[in-house]
Length: 330
Image (cartoon, rainbow, N blue to C red; front, side, top):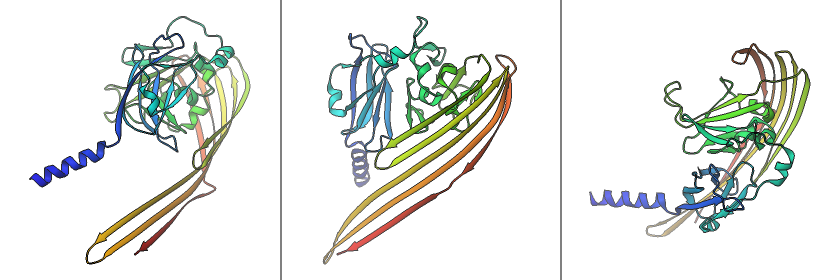
């Protein structure tokens, strides 16, 4: 029994070793507290999401399960994103500066808060904020409180991957978010306690509500994304749309290049009648190219009803994983 308890204590100490909790306060340049600012820990060198939290109404935050040496990203709507290492979180007060360039590009109308609670939903006003110039719906979601984006995937702090809806329709492929312009979004609602209308397995829901589109004609846009870590990943996309009365005809082309690389090394010593050493090294690298094309239509009957259809084609020009294992015994 004593051996069992000792083993449990050993595993507990190993699991918590090197993890810390950081607290602090986020303010603007005038020392006014910034509520609903995102504070996110990212691993290096891939900048993958580790943990996240938001500031309370007094600008205070508590970030848990963070290891020394990780990158901390602090962001708030209308302010320049701040990056710090864990040692800099010991500062009693972290100030953020207004995003002057973004403020010059948009005229914000209205006096109500950009972020506010409505029932059990955290609502972010997009139409009357800087987020209307963010680019796409994907860019908007990457900036709202309690949400973090890693490439084309989204995480809600403490709730995992959310379900995403656009005007009540479930988004089944996140590339749809790239086809929705931020200027067409009215607001975004985040539910971290979705309620009985959703399956019990659903931990969080994001609901996007769009504005009523005005005017007829043809439009298009081209987007390019570049991600650099140990490897280079690319996303290239082109979208086209034609609108007449309540009818929308749309199409898009999407190209994605993802590369992966992993190196692990294990050394083992066995001391019996003689000393035996074993060295194992595994190196893995892979690449996936994905091409997709989508076209369809949507007809808006009124503010609450619409119908449509979409067709998607997928292709993988190249996809491979190479693994090399080297064993050395002495």
